[in-house]
Image 1 (cartoon, helix red, strand yellow):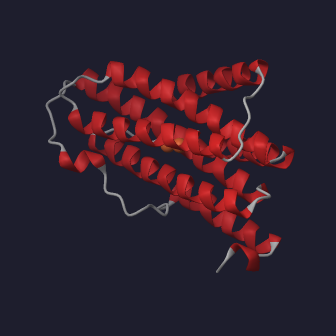
Image 2 (cartoon, helix red, strand yellow; image 1 turned 60 degrees about the horizontal axis):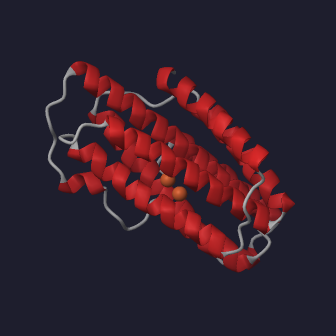
Length: 214
Ligand SMILES: [Fe+2]
Ligand SMILES: [Fe+2]
């Protein structure tokens, strides 16, 4: 079915379906395989495993937020070309979501209980940015991706070199996020005002701190 034939009500149902898949089911992924598959497992001590599982839980929640943001944005995007192009980014975020969940599982961790909360908040922000206009919502995506890239770098510093499976996922995610940000800019995303960027950073700090624990 093409976008053109979807009514607003249809789109709402599609969004609800995607929200439930993101939070509780199997999200629709792309053709790509998990980059960790090509890497062998390593021995980690208990404390390392626990810490890395928590970092990957943060990344998983980050991807839940990314999913919500892209969906909120897609619901309101005015330009069909932009919407189509953002759909590919959203599908790649689903890959990230899936890979992070697999790694959390492998390390014996669990996903965050706060995911529905962060999904709802990010969806609202994505939709609000979308209502403000494509250049704002694309600017928001670009800034988000830039901040995520920063987080991934921080995590890469903390994950030991021997943990190749975790690192392979983080490195592929970083490559993708950079591309997503560039794409959003190329479609006309504007630079966000500094207070908004600070607010986003403060919010993500609350997310990472709370999700590390819960
Ligand atoms: Fe991502
Ligand atoms: Fe991304």
